[in-house]
Image (cartoon, rainbow, N blue to C red; front, side, top):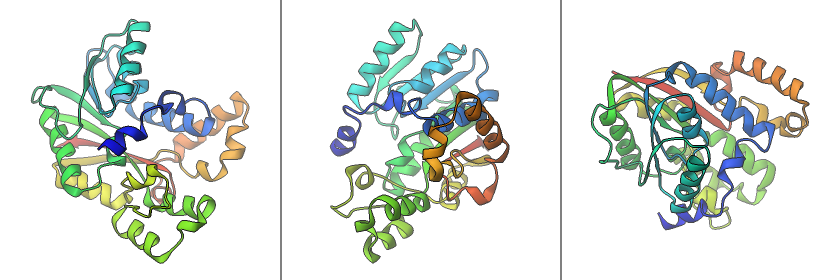
Amino acid sequence: MEELIAQYTGADEDSRLTRQYIAQLEYDTTMHALAKYLKPGNKVCELGAATGRYSLKFADMGCDVTAVELAPEQVDIFAEKAADQNLKVKLFQGNACSVPFIEDSSQDLCVILGPLYHLQSIEERNQVMQEAKRILKPGGSVAIAYISRYFVAGLFAQKFPELITPQVMSKLLETGLVSDPKADSFFRVGYFSSPSEIEQLIRENGFNPLRHLATDGFSRYIATGVNQFTPKQYNTWLQSHLKTCDEPSLLGSSNHGLVIAELV
């Protein structure tokens, strides 16, 4: 836990989603997919809210927002931003696996866009899903992001060839974990899912998947080109991507995936 908090202490998590087109694509795709659930007055909870990039947008759209973040520094930045923007959000420092301060059956939507990147045991992953289930109203919805282990394998081949060993690759592909000391701490505290594994987790915890999106598609592989787009070119690329991001064949190759599911 201390290593995970350290990973996000001093990290510029807020601008990560805006400083490059390749990251903005992740944000824009997620917001487009969630738009129908973000009606004014809807009660929305974000577990793992970082510095509030999503939660503050939800609040600006008129939602009644509750946000939970593990890293104290990120919570402080979030609170400062909320004050600067004069936006009201119920903000808590806490672990997504246990949010007893959120009432049962109180939320219309639960957004989990970071915790599944780091919950390394199946027990922890079940815990966060059960908390989402507990706090949602009957028929409520959950949105869960994950990082694909297949993308991570490709990233190792491209940038970290020293990690292409039988031991590292076997563990990554079989468990979604990376423990080799040569790996960056981001990978060592990470959990990287497969599309089928994330769907299984969701179904086994009482949810019915409605959409499964390749949030980045294959754009991360051509990041140099995408990041050099003009604003008009980026918008053209985004509109094309939004028409294809539900294509199942893109799921494993996308850096991030997003599943939207309803409580059964």
